[in-house]
Length: 439
Image (cartoon, rainbow, N blue to C red; front, side, top):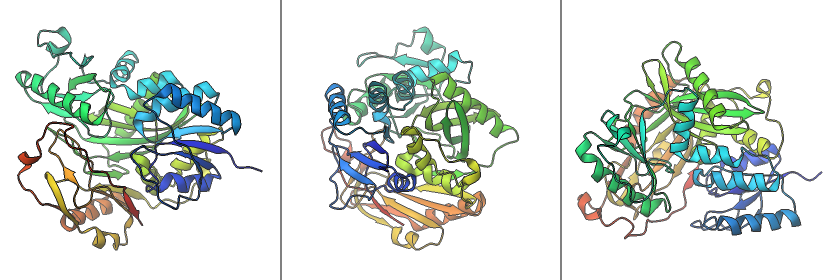
């Protein structure tokens, strides 16, 4: 019997987890590569075909998919790349394939709609204001802005990762911050002209990996993400399961389930980020995908034994996910150490990764930035130098391991003066390298 086929949109082949998951699930992958990706000569074994689509022209891309589906039907379509979530949902809807639906996808990718739906559902939402359109200026007399307590955070409504996220401490600094975020958007997120201004929450940050099937939401892991204070929100750690105050886990699970219902997401994976204020969780965003280009799978699998990536693919082709009682024993805790940039300039070396690869706790080292790449000062975002993914008997061991990595890994720059790289946004092309993943 032929195995089912799934169209996988904009997944880098050098990040192995989703392709390995397709093999485990017995699903063939029709790969839609990212336009900036040079494919290697040997593709992952699960890839049966490469299909080029230009998502900058969604109508033409959908017609190309429709034609391919008529010739050789496929069973599902999925993505781990946040900007592609709406297109994937619309394509699934148009072709009669499993999916979350176009309306839910748009709300999960637009922070304005997301917050409005959360608020309408009675959920905990930081107070916020919209700045719609490329010319919308923050009017200090506007009611929605005068109601906000500073500090606030400015972010792109259609942003992802840490691109263009800025903390602003005083009202007089808001116009300059808004323009800085817009400049980053013009360079890094074409078409992202709408912004959100929301009150800053100072509690610890957490990430939740969940899986929905036929409307039932299972929270797999709640992981600790540190307590970033800004002004720019460079990620540093992710460890699961997170130590939590009494009652906080149940409150988080209720809020995540409510978020799925508010957005209308009844099928598939989600990666949710939140902050705790006392014992109350405030959701910052929910991404309708496996998070971190597959890193979230490693976290869920290491901490619980849940095969998140394989189950996400199964659901996307209309199959049932693996039953919880069939899961393999878990390591106990899983972690991602996000190597900080630690400065700006042209990278001379990323030191320590070879030593880290040899450590017994290390499962994967994924290097994204290399010697010669330019790291621009925040609020620009050049990416992270590397991820180090590991498993441990418990979260305390993961924390000790991360303290060791603090000492072992460093990024060296050729130019110490960051001002040299404060060029006009978009004037210099960002260096492109394929991530290198090693076990």
